[in-house]
Length: 300
Image 1 (cartoon, rainbow, N blue to C red):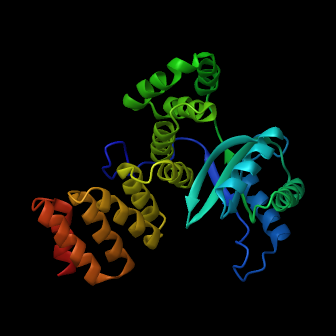
Image 2 (cartoon, rainbow, N blue to C red):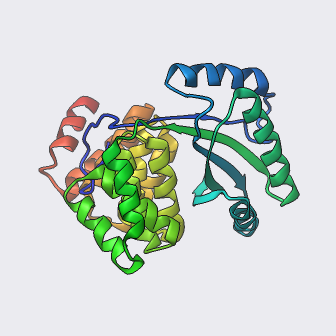
């Protein structure tokens, strides 16, 4: 996937199980048989360890073209004890993510969906875009660490999070940056590093949400654009990857890695001419880029 230094590496999921069920966007031309799909979905969740009587983290998503309407809905949800996770710009629209620890059966999840869909409509937000469930096999050490993090003074919290991050203690860094995000401490840096942590633990969807929010805060953030390219390639969403890689090389035209990644994305998409073009640009910047050399051989 990706790491702090933007080099590609593979990693396995350290803990946790993330999954998502989302209704199609309005106007997608499909009718979703939501009730039956949720029942199947919960059967799968139970097979992966869900105890319907135990509260777990449910993450809920909303989409609208107006950032103002999204932020107003955020305030309404916070008053209803939802936790604010972030806002990301996805395909030109704004996606709000909130979370809540609660217990659900398939039936109660369907009722929650109806409630949130109505709440979105009442607040002029176009789409309730489904939910994710996070099942964690959290060890005692991490559980205790969360309590310790909550005791750290706000002015020291970001520095402490960086300490864990810089020594690659990813689970603890994630907990610390979660706390930073919830308190609004250094949002751009906290979201970015939390995204890196999520990616290294296999949570690609979560990493994308965080990186998209970094770009929303700062469209000129080279590393976030670059890493979004990597993450979207991982999901085989090549058009999205190309858009972010293109932004990255626009921000840094001396990035041989950026041009190589663009070439790779086009090659995977099956557009050989563009792949060759960007492979040659990569080698023009750095004739010794081994990945671009290897890709060029495959393309010729």
